[in-house]
Length: 416
Image 1 (cartoon, rainbow, N blue to C red):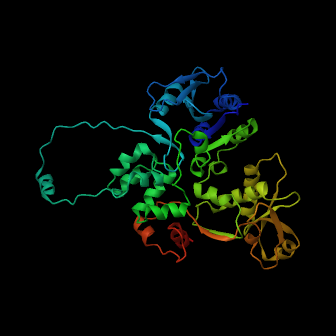
Image 2 (cartoon, rainbow, N blue to C red):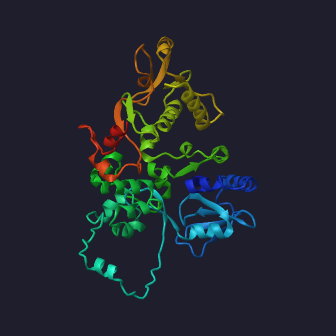
């Protein structure tokens, strides 16, 4: 018995979907649900894109004008909806893109391959001022990442197709100009190395293994990595497809940063404390953690307690949790505002908490006990996202705790 092919949606596909007119949106919805049901159906006509850099990118006809761009590998059972647009615009989008697996991290990456034609102009006669500038001795700029081997750059998340471009970078603004084309983990890794970190420090902070053999043709395995799941989501039934495509555009519902993904799931030995500046994703992480606990570690009749210190935020979080978890099932969580007067009622209730084993245990909150101790794991982690308001020099000089295992801790501590 053959397994059903895996169908995934890319972040670019959902972003583009949100921009479509309502009449086209409904048409794409109908087609996507049929595609999810059976991407191998003979009724789906995969057309080659002659100018595409990636022969696995195919065009699928939606109507006379609209086209979907799909990743259809020559072997394997993974199909990815990548983009949708008018015929010519969709083809232009696909021509310079390639979906590949990083040979060191195993992550699936969408690479924008660009080639710039250099036209040599006839030399102009320099002015006296220009001549004076030319006569000044100019210090040659060394490459920012000249000391790193290819495997080290790949381990940071740099796509293989962009190694040459990254090696030619000599100024930090050039790195920032590449941010839109680099995967998020690739840009952040290079940012940290440019700030003074070593590759080992970056990988240790990420808890990323780069010592395993990677099959660059196994896209099913690549989809399982946290890095891939920060930009691709697998849909395995019509209900999941409709829930994702019908919901208002809220990328946090579907895509998590790899560090957030690791913190949101899994068993721990006790409470955790996550530090980060405004907008770094602490509340989003907490909501995904609450959902994971409710789905995976909460027995029938018990609930996960989610507390906050303001009523408005509690209301927003409750609404977002309902969106995140879906409305088809009874919630296994409870969202409350934490105030001094709530300790008595909280002490009378038992709340679910994850243990270091696969089983769940319950324990009552005691008066005066911090609310987050009832619902989250017990180890210390500090994380934040890159912010361009920080210069690399201030990042490098930021104080870090003595027991910090990675550079992210220093920025998070200072930002808080």
